[in-house]
Picture 1 (tube, rainbow, N blue to C red):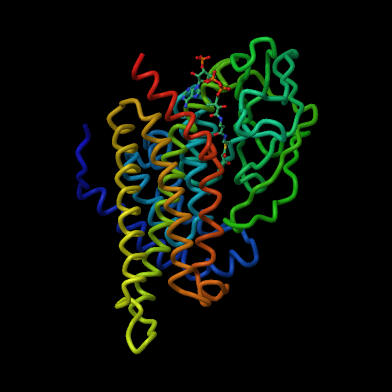
Picture 2: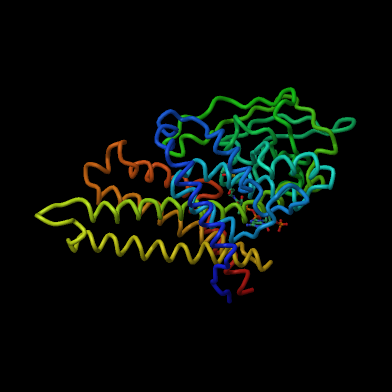
Length: 383
Ligand code: CAA
């Protein structure tokens, strides 16, 4: 069981994130989306506010907060701009978490501190051209040489790929051991042979940067292996369990933004001599969006609370991501419907909610993968 109670600290963090999102993120979000421009200044400010390493101990440059604080901030920021949300989520969940949990003190000093303060940001490199959902099927290789490893391969769909300074890269160090032969390497952007490609031209979250990365004879010293040789897949899966809470919160934010836009518009737009909010067809949409949103919010908070209580949150995180991402797509579609023709043009924000929502059903494990994760956890509980 879990109890849902926002503390004063949680309320303060939510309010700070809401104010930051409305005052600093919102004004330029439409332009950034149109031009596909990375939110460099905003990411810097998020670092100053402590949003880039929220769950990291202050000893290592973080804010020392809990997962609940993280989802509250993610929701508020993503309600205004999901592109900014994903930069924050990847840095917190997939990069800082792994180094914090598996890194040596020397690794934390060198990489975690600047990542958690937001001085730099990071990227997580698991997916490959032929290893998306089937993540154990890594083709990137790491061959042992004197003093380190030589990596070769290609990584795909890397969020923060063109702008990051530090990358966690999974590579096969022993193919015979399959996923137990995958290791995680910490790689600096300026390492010879490490080449981020061109930014992808995406449907949504257009101001976040996503690219492929080529690795050609990249030498990585032994002390840049994270968590020991052969633990890379475990690190990746555990990071993604937490990452799914972050993406669920991002999806929740998109759903909230779309819902609130539809609700306000329904009171302003008149048809048949009255606000469309007076029409039962619109009321049903609003009521349905709100109900799904609240249900998704409870699952997202539950996953965060379980994580904070150091309980198993694998199933809860997958369920939260599954429902919140479906809710984001649903609310975005319905918000467009409530806006009618205005919902279909770029001047109004709602069409962007739909474009941004779709990716939450795909990255950090597709909805199909979340079903697998949930079913496997249920069957484990039975055994
Ligand atoms: N948590 C912890 N461990 C897990 C796990 C989880 N959620 N899921 C699997 N594992 C462990 C298993 O216990 C197993 O370990 P052992 O052999 O020690 O028992 C190991 O991982 C392999 O698991 P399976 O035998 O079940 O392997 P599988 O191939 O049948 O299934 C999978 C694995 C669950 C489908 C996995 O490949 C997966 O999660 N795929 C989705 C990958 C994904 O989410 N990619 C997102 C890319 S990153 C991204 O999008 C970031 C971004 O930029 C925004």
